[in-house]
View 1 (cartoon, rainbow, N blue to C red):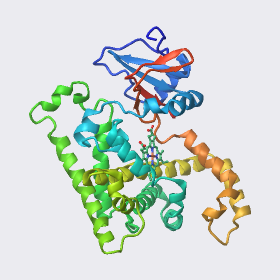
View 2 (view 1 turned 30 degrees about the horizontal axis):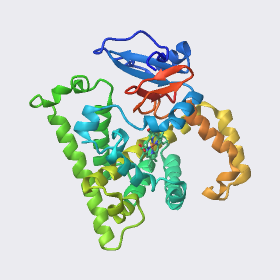
View 3 (view 1 turned 90 degrees about the vertical axis):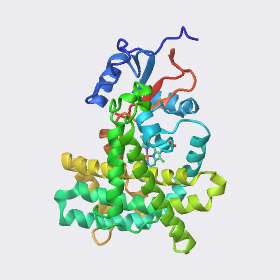
View 4 (view 1 turned 120 degrees about the vertical axis):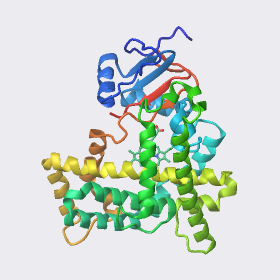
Length: 359
Ligand code: HEM
């Protein structure tokens, strides 16, 4: 099968020079897709990176062949040294990943989400008042909204009224560390693995790991004691603790899983809201159409509820277009092929890093 060619792409780079462009990565990958076709391969030494750049190819390869792509590429700085393998977004395939994923997915179903609708609506009302009173700080209001919703979903914590909530500040500091470590090429250890054993090299990552673990443990302990006192509201962590035996997760794994949920759902949600506002500002004619629909369906003497959702196709189209226009995770999150995957005469080889490029 080795004679089946890799997807087309630019000439290979030496292993020490990064095959992925360092700036404007989404645009650069889109240019490559325009030049070479819907799947492109890049080579850095013996490492193959495949970029999927069309919806059809993404559905064929990442959904139908999804089982061969659940793994993640090895990430020494972020995945191993900072997260000790417990951050679900970077967890390698295998027993721990299966346990983490099963535990998180039972709580991320549409039916479960319904339990949070009133809380989301309450927060949306606060957001709208914040926008009316202080429109210049719209990004901050979106961050408050997102932090508040995800804190409730993850820990059942009551609504923080500002971004200065001490717990939110601690969480944002931890997330900033993660973003620093995730920057492509940020840590040489990802290219020279032996560096991790160099005395003093991993000191900062070890400190940051300790800081996030302490925060996540503290949050888990708080919910645990609320459960003991019978005062815990519904939340992901409460469900996790109640089903701890079935999920077979250690205390630290549970702590990280709940913490990761906050990381996965807060900035992503805040950025999506901000982009929707930007789209409305850039395209007033599209905004006017949504406004007209809201006036017609809802009127001006009440706010919309989730029950109105099905009667607002223009609004839904606007939001979907917003996601397409400025995707939040522009090049997706990398996967690793655990066996050869074939698509239209090309071979994505076992071990390749695969990006589904949303842009
Ligand atoms: C607009 C908002 C969001 C965007 C753009 C977004 C984007 C993503 C992306 C690109 C991935 C990686 C998928 C992959 O493996 O290729 C991901 C994974 C994940 N997201 Fe989100 N996300 C959003 C909101 C949320 C929220 C609100 C939550 C939690 C309540 C969440 C929880 C997760 C989890 C747990 C994973 C890991 C899933 C797994 O590996 O099985 N996300 N998200």
